[in-house]
Length: 410
Image 1 (cartoon, rainbow, N blue to C red):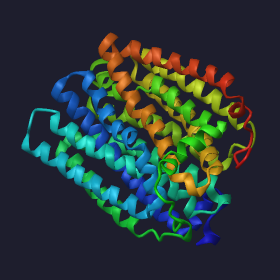
Image 2: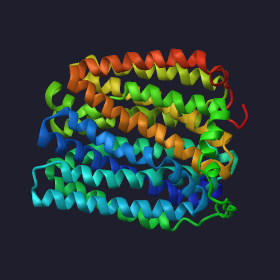
Image 3: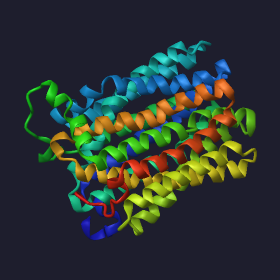
């Protein structure tokens, strides 16, 4: 197989990574279908953007509350088993959402209950699957693996929302049933990943010091601290995903299929950029490139917020996804290469909380802002705030700004 793999696909020389990539893609694809379906179903029931913010909050809180546990579990136990078990649990959540839909209940309380369980599973899944990737490829293929790993999620964000919108248009039952099938296949693939020797690490005696080791490491390594916190505040303030049902129904009036198109647009831009990065990886001035791209992400967020034309909205979302992909690529490569395997689970747990805060909690922020003074002002002000964050972090974290090469100890 290795003779058939070019340097741009070098990570796929390793069979474990191939199974990992497919399982991650199917899980992400399923998550996108469920995300579109849950968002539309909740807004269909209540017609209140505040409830869309609650969806983000209940998905985020478990990762925040369990951050000291999830990373330690990823460092002490088999990461393949954790990843597989969480995928199986997500399948059970899909069954619960399907059951709720079939019974025809007209309250969102059961949906929020399922989302709490789903958020808990993802809290354990995130650190395990992120920490597993460096165990499946050598360091020379890690940047390539991260680009492909990010692209699997981005491809899912392109195809998943469109599929979710079309399936939900057929029936909510069709959407949740499809998610269940995809998760079943992903669980089989994940369970077949052979745990390499690196996973059999010495187990540290549980203590408060071992639980907070991830926080301690991040605090000491200013490049890692700057990269993680930069993403947190930029996307926390600039995220607009939660309000896409409002734009689809009330502003652009494009219906469920149009919601899928809007949800897909950032992924289209991200995939195009990921393909470019695989051919032309960032070789110098990585920090400066990341700052510029985050500022542009904020600018096009504001453009999307002000747009009342479907073509302009889709274009702005695509550009947002493309510039965000560069930030993800630089940030994740720096974090993985700078973090020792012994604490990688705990560092990734903290990172996933920050990522979750910038996404799910960002959706909560967007929902509350839209409820308070309207969806359009909420998105425009969020984009402007993201540009401001880029300026502040430029001065507060000179080590990150001066980072040039994507390798350990830049």
